[in-house]
Length: 399
Image (cartoon, rainbow, N blue to C red; front, top):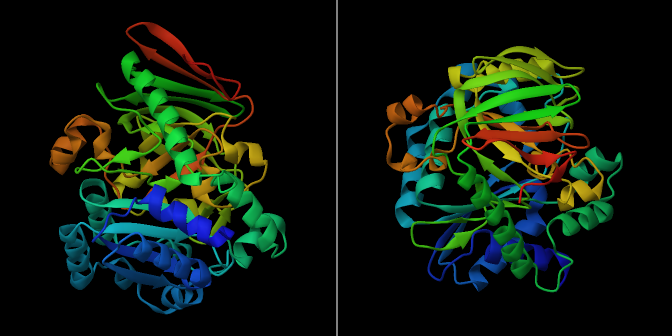
């Protein structure tokens, strides 16, 4: 099989694990046309009943940012909400192809409008994804993304890096992902047995203590839907993660990899937390776009995820910055401000928003991952047995 066909096979078989007769939504950029066609072909070959492509395009989005009113960019549309509910009712699978085709398309745009989200639609998508749909997000190589990584449109080199990160070099990539997912699940189970009350990240420029919700669950590798069907929400995935108590985060962090946010590059980002809330933002470049997103809603200034990744990650071993959150977040430990994962607490998916908030889960229209790990990072946990080492100098040490 050629690499695009292998890519599509991993997305369909290991990612969303399409079942015969299932519908599929494919969210993709116009720059990913060839890859999107291969994914559609693989989906139908796996037995999909129908595949509906949902197209995006950077220049078209720039036109909206330049000319549409801010209120319009933020307003949810009844027809879009109804469409999301219909997909959920039909039990569709959702595939998202990412990979910024033009990282400079929003240069010079109003940062507030560039960061605008349709909050109600975003929450509706997340709710159906977490409750009813199997989904996966995967990076799709293209010249614009390659230029951002290497300074030139070397798509061949990018394909080599992406192929390694996605285990396309294995004889059976889907089986390799099942094995990797099982190992990450074991790490999550080991963390669950510790009943940790907090974790602490310590590294150059970072000293962050994060409180955890009693009984919270650490997720590693893949997930299983309500019908018992396994899937991988992200490919690649190298993390074990949970959602913290949004009210119990204190200290400082230094982001160790560049962040692409609303089409803008953010470098040297530093944040300060007090009683859970981000109170200070500083950056070498792009602080304004971060501030714009944090102003989206009240929950945007609180954490919704803490994650553990060590240097054995294939993305870490690649030794490059992918300038793509899906990849870079899996290179080292990271946290995310914004929306929490209700499944991180027992019975969380069945709870009302008020019940989730009372436990400490966060609610927001955004969810932005930032890498704070890498060489020198140490992570410890505190629980009934006292303090335990989890990661020491970027190496997993917890048994």
